[in-house]
Structure formats: C-alpha cells, structure tokens
Length: 199
Image 1 (tube, rainbow, N blue to C red):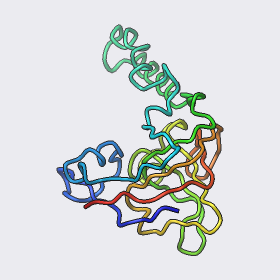
Image 2: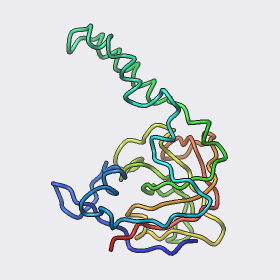
Image 3: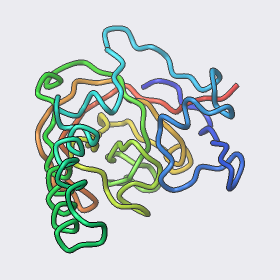
Image 4: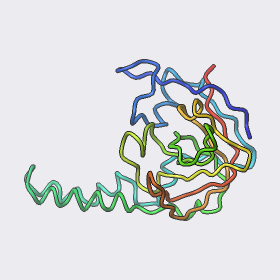
C-alpha cells in the first residue's frame, strides 16, 4: 500500500478550506487551495483516467440532454409534458451504461470515499465516487460513476483519511454490484491507494 497522508482541504466561497457536500473531485484537484500542490504518485503500469472516461461513449449528461433538447424547447415551460420529458431523460441518465473499453484495464482514479465495510475503526471496503458526500449526504451518482473498492487483506483506510480525496490504482472490473448505499458499475479488488497530499 502507498503511504497515506493528511486529507486536503478545499476552498469554497461558503467555507474556505473545507470540503462541502457535493464538491466534485475535479474542483478539488484544480482549485487554488489545492492547485498544483494536490498530488498523487504516478503508479507505474496504470493509466490515469477521469470520471468522464467511465461513461460509455454517447451517454454523457450533455449527450443525453442533446437528444432531448428539441422536445424540451418545443413544449411550454412548467407543462406536465416537460415533466415527462425530464423524467425520461433522468431515466436515461440513471441507466447510462459502463464503458466496456475499460473492463480489465489497469487504471488510476481519484475520488471520495463512501464506507461500506469496517474492521473495527478501519475501512476495508468502500465506494469510490466523484463528489464529496455522494451516497451518504447527497444522492448517489449513476452506476457508471460508482466503483466498489475492496482492499487487500491486511490493508485498511482510517476514518480520518476517508474524509479527504484519495486515489486508487488497480484493475477495473466492469460489472454491476448492488450495495446498501448505491449500485456500482465497476469494482477494483486489492488496489494500491493513498490520500492526496497538500504541500
């Protein structure tokens, strides 16, 4: 396991230096508070991927919206028909499939922790998600934005480290897993992992 360090903070207009529920990992890693100083080691043999890479081609939120745009523009705002269109669009978004091209690929990905299994006060299994508080304090993302991480025997993540951004590197399995918190479209077993550091 990679050495872990103290979790980073995130500057927001509401509360500088503190992660807010719903903060996406992309904002944290590109924010002035984290900037170039938020870093993870590059793990040899693993390809760094972004959360958008986990979405199958043609099924991003923008692409799904574009398919419904003309219908949305053709109806009167506030009409029941518009509600029906949005409901159908949301169903498409929620059912958006995983990216089969990533199955069995060795990847490295950053995200936040939603704990699933504990050994005493240590976390041994968790969901990796793209925004802070997902599955716990804010609604779960679609299944292609949830990865079940099962740590190798003897490895664990402390509760303190679970509050910040982490990175994992492992072999991605594209297969649906139902958990108490959310349905995951991917899993990684026995990854190398660590927390982001700030200098």
